Image 1: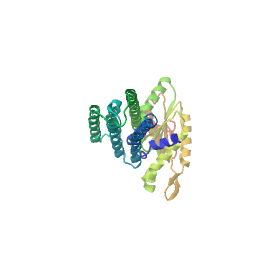
Image 2: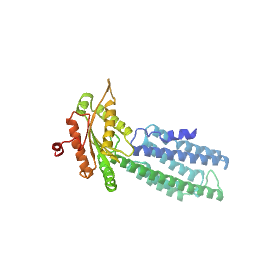
Image 3: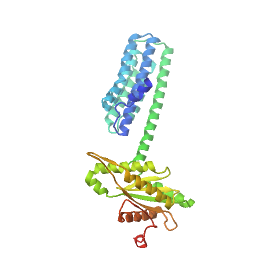
Image 4: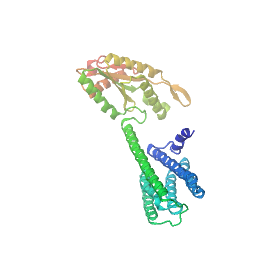
Length: 371
């Protein structure tokens, strides 16, 4: 039951937020729940091992207080949640060191986690909060380190103090490891997100122009080195301006998205699909001859023409595409040359009535080829 509920608790307050902000909120929830768990263990220790019900009651109140940040995150108050966590933690350490036990127990060593945690959890612009909490943690650590609690609520033996001291050091180490793992994981996710943004078209989710040229250049070089067939298809939507004018740009974008999903479902795993610009897309086909590329293009042209695009207030509309194909040959060397010839074929397909496929140079007259 707890395992099923835990993911929901960790994600409280992180829905519909940018990746970095959502990740910091999840980390705050993790740290809060972990601290509540550790505090609960100490509470059980005070009850069953040390037989100190009053101390256990005080510590249980802090156990509950560590859950408040999770509640604040659920109410979409992330900065207040972070501040609340650190204030509860520092107050708890003062109470433990100067009321419940003495500084011999080492509870004040937890202050070492505050500056690291503050710089990890707060956003870049929250410099005031980071500096203020770090300075406050240093002051409180020095106060607890140099203040002798002569009348603690619990008189601990040297062995028990040593045991608690070791547990504090151990938990500090565990928490540092957890923070480092989270920090490294966050960096990796940020890098992955940046790589995705740099290589993906934001509207359709397929590869963008830059990624196409980088990846396709490698595919071409490999095909040229091994003398393997390679073909390229440029795909351009017909009458797309009229679609935008009649149905609106939102529906036009929806048309591009739906058709891209359709194409992605029907191409082979080795094919590479990308958006060049606007309404123009490209497919690079490895191990594919001109005839095979034409068969693939014809299959795509047919299923695109049959696809129904939903329209608000209307049932649907359908769109068509024209395609130009070029294949690597002795006369067509280089990716740019293939793109240029496929573009010429595409222009001829448009001139011949659209919703059709033209392969270069088979269906192009010498006059057109010389353009």
